[in-house]
Amino acid sequence: MTAKPLISMNRVFKNYETPSGSFAALRGIDLEVQEGEYVAVVGRSGSGKSTLINVLTGIDSPSSGEIHVASTAVHNLGEEELAKWRGKNVGVIFQFFQLLPTLTVAENVMLPMDFCNTFPPGERRPRAMALLEKMGIAEQADKLPSDLSGGQQQRAAIARALANDPPLLVADEPTGNLDSRTSEDVVRFFSSLVNEGKTVVMVTHERDMTRYFTRTVMLEDGAIVEETEAKAWS
Image (cartoon, rainbow, N blue to C red; front, top):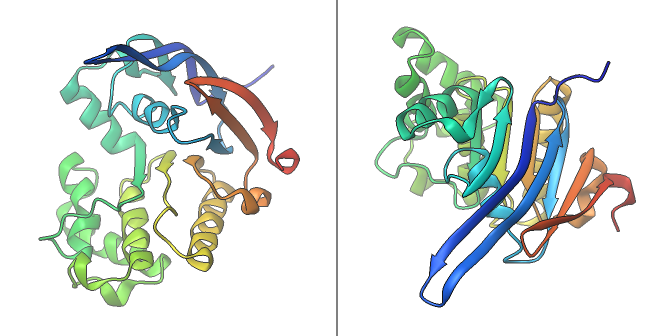
């Protein structure tokens, strides 16, 4: 018997109203992702990759269609419910890090735990420190994000995404502002998380790192035009 997918997107459309009329960013997306997959979402600029990530994580809502993550019907959740669900179940990593500039690195990592109350207050900083240690930047814990390099900021953002131990990590061009060596470190680290049982969906242009992914999904004009095993991507 086939296992129920962790992610199921069924006939998902997303339209935006513009001065020149309605623009279809997603056109009938059907996508399933099994638990433990490392999926790369690829395509040209404007193909709908970020929109797919945004509706999957509840940052944006679909115009129509259904999105299920585990047992949750994401498309039916209200804004407050979405924030709570996302905080506990999805780690989101952005290209521009999105660390709060007035908080220290450790405080940024503790923030999801504070918001969702997932760990007792006395355990939050030790957990943040353990995650920063895992990312190799524990010595940066009490600095502000502006004092860190781009690679260090992205590592801090990944630690923050892992704060509540979510089963799903979703990353939108997390290596877009990093040099090639740091980019590979990040992609490889996500692969290690998959080996530990996480599921990762990542928008990427890193076509020379296909050995790390289990599958690629190619978008074009808001539609999935190809799904392949990563090793076949060239």
